[in-house]
Image (cartoon, rainbow, N blue to C red):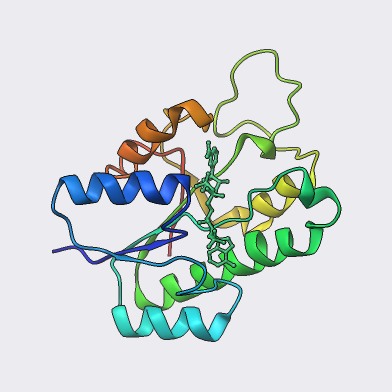
Length: 173
Ligand SMILES: NC(=O)c1ccc[n+]([C@@H]2O[C@H](COP(=O)([O-])OP(=O)(O)OC[C@H]3O[C@@H](n4cnc5c(N)ncnc54)[C@H](OP(=O)(O)O)[C@@H]3O)[C@@H](O)[C@H]2O)c1
């Protein structure tokens, strides 16, 4: 059975994902920030080395978009850039596929139509900049099916089960 690890497991997306995995009787290891603080590289490495997951759903993030502009600026970068790098590095070391969820904040909002995954990025806020900062060269297109809108979170979680035909970006090891 595929070994699955979920970060940010008690957040909105992590919860949807756990519910779907539970419905299907799939086994997984799920961590919130108390169990595994992704900004703590040693803690992340220890969990990954012990569990050796095959697939990692990286749902942990600092998502206070407005606060990220001022009082939350530092933690935004610590979690969304440094923390994600810790997760990506550990995933690479153990040979795990990493599913990382992007955001429409990586775009500047000037496109008159819907954005496609390969459209040029131009984040206008700290949240979008931090989310984009983690190794653009490691991202590759999967599909264009997910909008990333809050209303589509459940369907987004469902698409994460089929990473070859579902989610818009995946960061590979
Ligand atoms: N929700 C949406 O509609 C939406 C849309 C587009 C993209 N996304 C993306 O989907 C991902 C998940 O979003 P979400 O809506 O599920 O966010 P969320 O509800 O805010 O959940 C984020 C989770 O990350 C955890 N976290 C924060 N700092 C952490 C740390 N240092 N170490 C470990 N865990 C930490 C939080 O745990 P604690 O509460 O314990 O701190 C929380 O459970 C994000 O990357 C976001 O950009 C979401």
